[in-house]
Picture 1 (cartoon, rainbow, N blue to C red):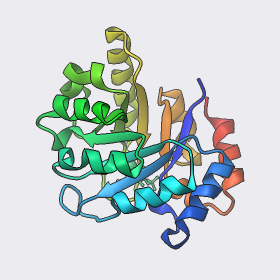
Picture 2: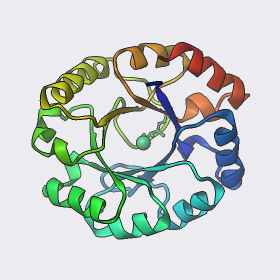
Picture 3: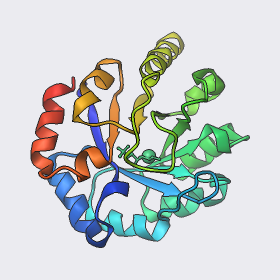
Length: 218
Ligand code: DX5
Ligand code: ZN
């Protein structure tokens, strides 16, 4: 299976959002990654359901919606109706994680759990059967353009082992600080999906950045 690439629109030009989404789709994006930040769980604020609805009009690609917010359980229906295909919640914000995942499935979206750099893989062992995507943060969430945390590579290996031991098939996604310079070794370490913000949107020519990413990833 080839490594999927999910451009993070956090780094796009918001004034031309539909055109930016169309441009990365044209360049070969597999998913569109959308970062929702509440100024509470993370220090930054970003966007909510109305903007996701607008992105939904601009593309048929799966919308991979990453909720960096407290009490995400209150908004699962809103994000699903706005057009989210994948709804990813942080382990750190969900004391009733199993129930939240069931609710996401009830709304016909794929389920995702996100782990901060400091949160061990073991904290989600009991719910992995309910999970379609595990997203490993490779920066502390809240901002684009940060440096990749190297210990994520061994965390990918731990998660792969858990997946194999349990006979499951969730996808392993990595988010933060991924770019042409390190995408090869992150994909080699076992990531199935790479989220890339500034590494794509700050590049001059999306098509040649994608060509380079495809060349260096498995
Ligand atoms: C960070 C977000 C990321 C961010 C990645 O909190 O979850 O998705 O947009 O941006 P880069 O690729 O610039 O690190
Ligand atoms: Zn993200």
